[in-house]
Length: 387
Image (cartoon, rainbow, N blue to C red; front, side, top):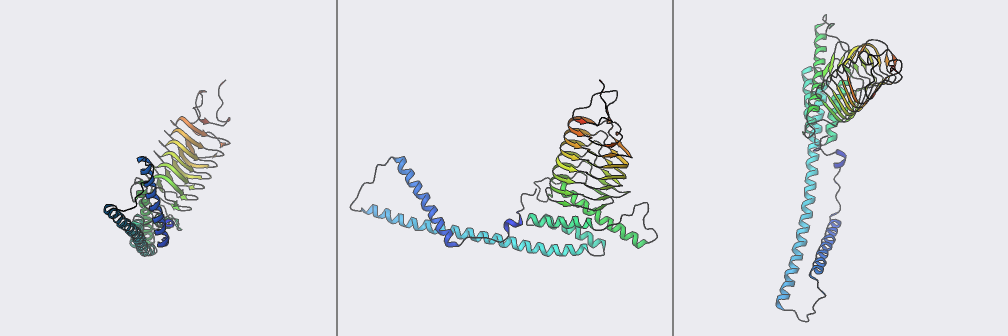
């Protein structure tokens, strides 16, 4: 999360008590504190009472005058302190309002650039929005900028593979390549901000990212850290011929949802670490593409592959380590394609293949009647221990 940014709802509208009430409460509090100090000192000195004095000496009278002036000076200082504090609050609120107003003006300009025909102008709009998110005076305003960038990726987009570009129409080809570059630049900017440590003022960790239904013909999220918030790839399409990289990504918190995705291209999670987040691929379809988890490490959290359809293509879990957390393949269908668990290591956590359909993946079932590794749960049709 970004600790330096206040939430907008916490600062919306400056609420100050009437100055009369504040002064009265301040004086009452000051008198109570003074009385407490006086009686504490009285008790510590062990005084038994007051010595009556019928006549005031000049020294006593002078002390009373000094005490009176001290009380007046203290009251004046208290009033000045309260007024100065209120003035500071008003100035801070005014500065926040000015910053928000300027942000809104820049935001309007940047968003309008995204709708321009020129790809160069749209690229400028993407970079402007990312810069606005970095300079946002509140967390909510930063989230708004991120939402617009994600919404841009969700816009209708027809992917044309590199092997079959619209070569007969040069202008159409250029328009397609320009749109593709703008989209991939947006992905790179998001990735770069997710790589920053959480204490960095420009880190976007912990913010929500909504890629629902987006079409990905490529893109690089490698090295990003998903440590909070909600990230949704629900219903996203990873198109044929494109490669989306999640290599060395860390899923350490929050929720990341790949529910119902269509994978006909390549999605690469090589070296990814699943250590605490809730990640779901439930209901996704592998239809001719490749999803790669080689050298990934599942050490915590929950990862769900339930009801995934492995109908065609390749799912590669080679050299994957399962040391903690829960990985669930409940009701998954292995009806086609290639699913490999060669050289995978199981030494902790739970990996379940309950109620699955189809044959076992290669490299998963122990050979020669060897016992199952701890935490690996296979259906009876795949593995029968020797008696």
